[in-house]
Amino acid sequence: MSIESRLSELGVTLPDAPAPAANYVPFVQVGDIVYVSGQISNGLDGLILGKLGADMDVEAGAAAAKTCAISLLAQVKAACGGDIDRLVRVIKLTGFVNSTADFTDQPKVINGASDFLVEALGDAGRHSRSAVSAAALPLGVAVEIEGIFQIK
Image 1: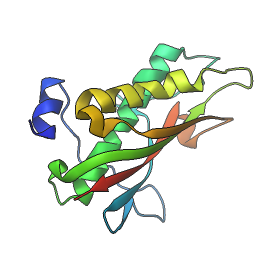
Image 2: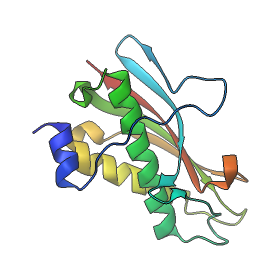
Image 3: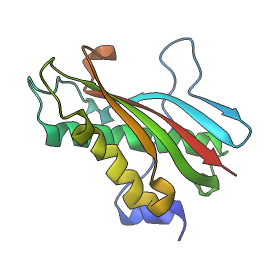
Image 4: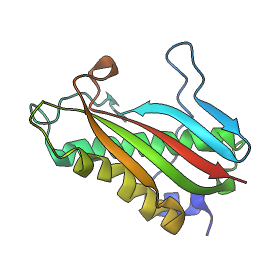
C-alpha cells in the first residue's frame, strides 16, 4: 500500500510543505539522507501554543507533536519531488517541548509524533529519538521537531 493511501486511511492529507520562517532551507539532502529543519506545532486553526506543565497537558502536547510529524512528512514529500513513496525510513527525530522546569514527561509528548509515524509507515516509521525540554520555543509553540530521513 502506498504511503499516501495509508495516510488517507488515517484521515491525514499532507499539507503543502511549510516555507521557512527565516534565512534557512526547509531540508537538505545529502545522498539518500534528508535532514528536515524543525517543524513547529501547527494545526487547522493555526499555531498550537502553550507550555507543558503550565497550561497544556500531555495529551494536548502529544496532539501538537503529531502535527509536527505531519509537517515533517510534507517536507520529505517536497524533498522527494512530490513522491512520498520514495521515503525508505525515518532515521531520527529530535523533539523539543516547551515546558516548565519541573515537567518531566517530554517523551510522552513526543510519542504523539513517534506513534503517528509508526502507525502511518509501519516498521519504516520506527526511529531513534531524543525528547528534550525547552524553556521557550519560537512564537510560543508547544512543540518543535526536526527529523532525519532516508529516501530512494
